[in-house]
Amino acid sequence: MAKEVLGKCPVCGSNTEITRISCYKCGTTIEGHFEVCKFCRLTPEQKSFIDAFIKCRGNIKEVEKELGISYPTVKNRLEDVAGALGHKTVSELQDTDKKKQVLDKLNNGEITVDEAIELLRN
Image 1 (cartoon, rainbow, N blue to C red):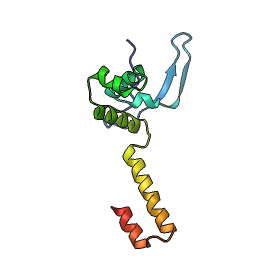
Image 2 (cartoon, helix red, strand yellow; image 1 turned 180 degrees about the vertical axis):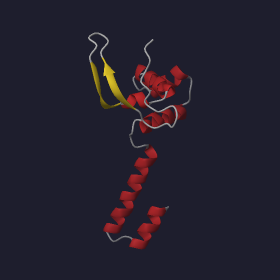
Image 3 (tube, rainbow, N blue to C red; image 1 turned 60 degrees about the horizontal axis):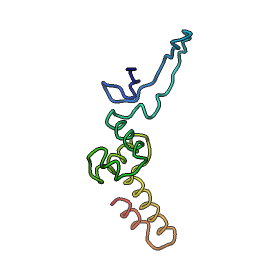
Image 4 (spheres, rainbow, N blue to C red; image 1 turned 30 degrees about the horizontal axis):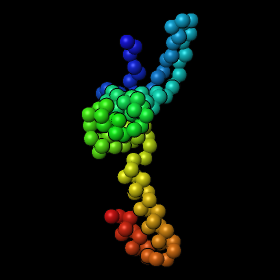
């Protein structure tokens, strides 16, 4: 079985980069700084979940059965993977929506600057 590229440093957890690529067939070697595929940065557990999710064609009920986990656990794992891939999480999207609503109220004169600051702090 082929070894996978480490997307995260096993010592500090930072993202890794590839600096050398070689061809098995012709022996060509290229050196430089190459980013690792974002899927390579997923943990083995996250990759396994994504594999099951795709196998089930995104049907959460089928994922529940396949992995023997509950609906909330499927949703949490999906959220975890989305965040690991660099996508905003549900809570980040909700925070962004809340901030937009506060700024819209401020812009429309419905609240004062002090009230807006207080709402954004909470």
